[in-house]
Amino acid sequence: MPRAPAGSRPEPAVTVEAAVRRYAARPVPRYTSYPAAAEFSAAVGSAEHAAWLRRLDPDESVSLYLHVPYCRELCHYCGCHTKIAVRDHVIAGYRQALEGEIALVGSLLPRRIRVGRLAWGGGTPSILGAEGLAAVLAALRRQFDIEAGIEHAIELDPRHVDPALARALAGLGVNRVSLGVQDLDPGVQAAIGRIQPQATVAAAVRMLREAGVASINFDLIYGLPHQTVASIRATCAAVAGLQPDRIAFFGYAHLPYRRANQRLIDETVLPDAAARYDQARAIAQHFQARGFVPVGIDHFAAPHDALAKAVADGRLRRNFQGYTDDDRPILLGFGASAVSRLPEGFVQNIADNPRYCRAIAGQQLATTRGWRLTEEDLARGRIIEALMCSFEADLERLDPARTYPDELALLRPLAADGLLEIRSSRIRMTEAGRPVVRVAAAVFDSFRAQDGKGFSMAV
Image 1: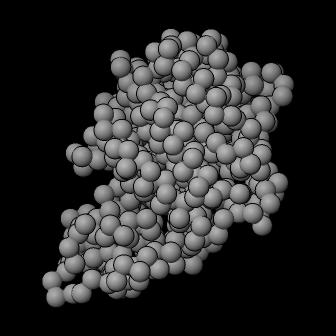
Image 2 (image 1 turned 120 degrees about the vertical axis):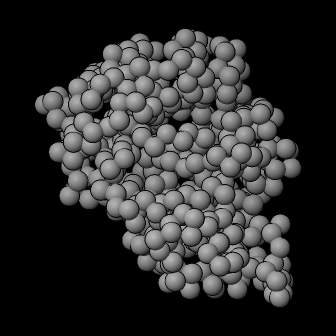
């Protein structure tokens, strides 16, 4: 635990915990990008997107993300851009649009570019079927040079994994799978519309490992209806018994005015801010006690995993997929609502699936909004990422051009509460303050009022 500054007296533990609980209820961005996607504007569109693609350095290795925004059924808690698909021709049409966008983007690049990382998200990407996934991968290979041995990851619903799919994924080179577990308590599952017995998850893990998929990640959610610390601990024990390589746990963001499906959740049985904090702490304590390495604020990794090694080496990064060891500055996103990060800025595709498909069919980029990065944006982004990944930031090193007096003044109350230390230009979260690092990061967000709404709680 970091030492207190010389001449200061450490705050009583009960006072520090009370401060953490108070700040934990603040709504702040998750900071998977800076600026946050909420700041993207229609002032940046397809013309800028095309120009930025043409100016990419062809010698730079890039990461690719493919978004498949369809599921066979929609869970009540889901906050993703996804829809229910009951007709196969809708899925086939979307797959054709993905292939069309890949070809269109490829035609705008200065020449073929190397790919060093590939990830599929959703929704449920496996809804494309083995043949559909293979077809999209073939489209990628026609435009890009995919390096051998890259990390090739996909998100899966354990309820839709069978031996044939597991073998097909391994055959396509998938070597990391993230399984959406969320919670294993039957009462919680009923409340969120996702019935998924523990045996189903265990069977999916077994089939994937037998097929040769090397790495298995689990996604958990806290803050769900009817969850308790006891039920969370039971889920964690069951999950740990399946020996995952990584665990990601996220706080449920209840935004029913944005997501109609979330209106199916009974708000009266949602845990309050104090209960959410206790649940998040219980998850962290459980996995840390079992030898998993803490990764940022919401991940744990087995000691052999690449994320654990990135933490040890000071190489941890953060992007739209969360914490990562991927240090590539360029991410090309394909699919409805997908975001790309390019050297000059961010661009995001149309979120509405039919409109996305129509744009691509018309040989037009599906860009709907974005952000042109300034030097100040880049500097503030470095500071925020440093805080989120290593819980400390040296302002003078990360941005020699600015001194941030206003931001340091806003941080002093957190320092007085024992949540961080300020030494000259260096900020370091204390061990107790780490859970609310997003609050400290938000101080450097020039777009964010401290009481801003529309984001999830800090914990």
